[in-house]
Amino acid sequence: MVDLASRLAASINADHVLDLSRTLIATPSVNPFNDPTRPGVREAEVADLYAEELRSSGMTVERVDVVEGRPNLIGRTGDPSGPSLMLAGHLDTVGVNGYDDPFDPRVANGRLYGRGSCDMKAALACFVEVARILDESGVELRGQLLIGAIADEEDRMLGSMHFGQHGPRVDHCIVGEPTDLAICPAHKGQLGTIITTSGHAVHSSVPEEGINAIAKMGKVIAAFDGYNEELRAAAPHPMCGTGSFNLGVITGGEIVSTVADHCSLEVDRRLLPGETFDDVVAQYRSRLDPIAHDDPEFTYDIAGFSMTSEALDTPLDHPVVAASAAAYEWASGRTANITAFTGCTDAPNLGAPAVILGPGSLSQAHSLNEWVEIDQLSTATKIYLHAALALLT
Ligand SMILES: [Zn+2]
Image (cartoon, rainbow, N blue to C red; front, side, top):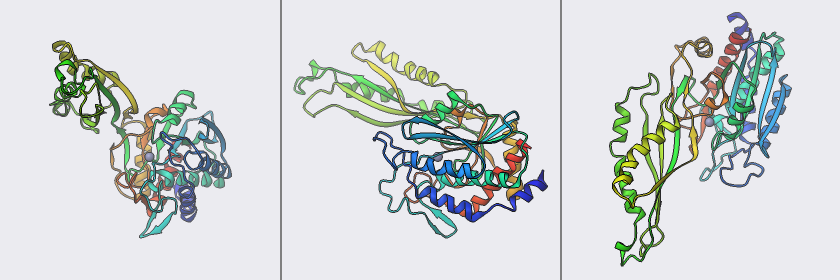
């Protein structure tokens, strides 16, 4: 297999990967977040282009609009009766407020600059090169290679949730988020929630007649004293370490001369694999219910909001981890770094054992000066190619 991989890797066309990366960057696909979708502020335009690339690389392409103008693409080649590997990535990018030239891909200092360069249009370009090489080589796969180009990773993860619910089911998944080519079989989950307190509004000259929701929120904040220390003292996950908690955003009241009748606090909790959203809400309630017990005027509510993501915890002995590590070592000549991914991804939603492994660094993702090291594009392409051959031939 190594001979085959070496022979095929020799036909990687680095210029083709770079050119396609540039074309993808130059086709805006900013996540609309709360805005209406329109050309460039949705995935449709870049998906049209990417679907054509997949087709011309010998794949059949299925397109599912998760929301109008916001498609998932699934490219397929090989034998559907055998094992399957999906190379997956998202089509959307974060916004560009304050970014001078986000869609004008620029090459300098061995780097490719532009919005989406490392997060994660370069990885999408590497995937196409793998499909093209397999197609042109005529290698017979005894399984199926899929390329999943997914909508809405940066906001509500609608694309990956749709994929997880409707399939197809795949046996192995490599998600090309920027890891600097580290192999990441695990990451923490995230739960964003809004805690609200209610009060009774009266004129501020007679505060004793009202109930101040901001003062009640003070009790909530005090109740979370020591929570991070408690989380840090718990048994760590071997890769992800321990969970954490953050008080993120607080808003409340109307005007200074009125006793505030509402206050809300957005909190963020990073979860370890194995912890559930319900577990976390139960922890919150165990800190807040005693306040309600002692103070009949204290009422609170907890509601979820969009920043939620499950943890990823693929067993280290799963073949997709071994194949990714072996592919890295073959492609780079260095020992694979198997570690946790720092952020959250849509990988847990895809319903398959997954590793995160891609070109570029998370420290450039979402920044106003996003770039990817061009050398990493060829290495990443080699890695994906080798892993596909290992798992599918
Ligand atoms: Zn990403």
